[in-house]
Image (cartoon, rainbow, N blue to C red; front, side):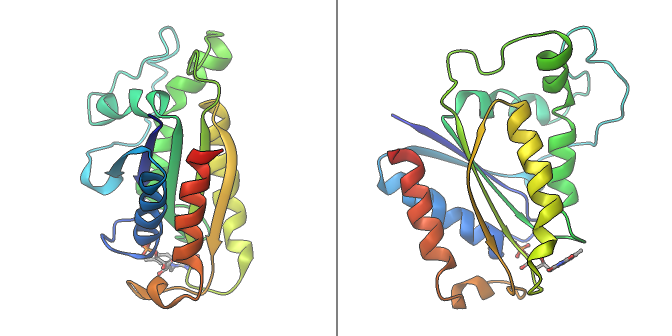
Length: 191
Ligand SMILES: Cc1cc2nc3c(=O)[nH]c(=O)nc-3n(C[C@H](O)[C@H](O)[C@H](O)COP(=O)(O)O)c2cc1C
């Protein structure tokens, strides 16, 4: 059975990107996948301190919830990532998680290790929501997520970027976003 890991980067439970992720995971589940959702804000994840403690081993030396999280994207066939736009980028909480994957970057590019060995088919889906109508706000976020997926050897397969949605739950009034997330979620595990 295909495994899907959903990571919600919003601090707002039941917020717009969180609802998009829920819908995408529902689509994946209905298509027969096993799904797991993690809310970054419920975890204790410190930022990278650039200590270079991972240089020799590719293992982060900080002891917090990242230690539990590290194997999960490697064991999942699909990674669904959701974030609100905060000041033209992803949430700080999600950025901290991504920066802590510097040790995986070290494994790949300094220690020449294969990432996700035997699981080269892994694919990612990024969804994001911003309050303004300007689509420029997604440029930085997409670059960060593309770089993150590339480091983990996950193909950046799909994105769903929704503008003009601000108040908590306002995405429910959007004409198509939740349906699109549901469909992409299903497609991601049917391909
Ligand atoms: C700290 C902060 C910064 C924000 N910065 C932007 C921004 O740069 N561009 C934008 O379009 N919306 C911005 N917003 C609005 C959120 O992206 C919007 O409310 C979104 O729906 C929140 O998604 P969520 O409910 O998943 O957390 C910001 C909101 C907050 C709280």
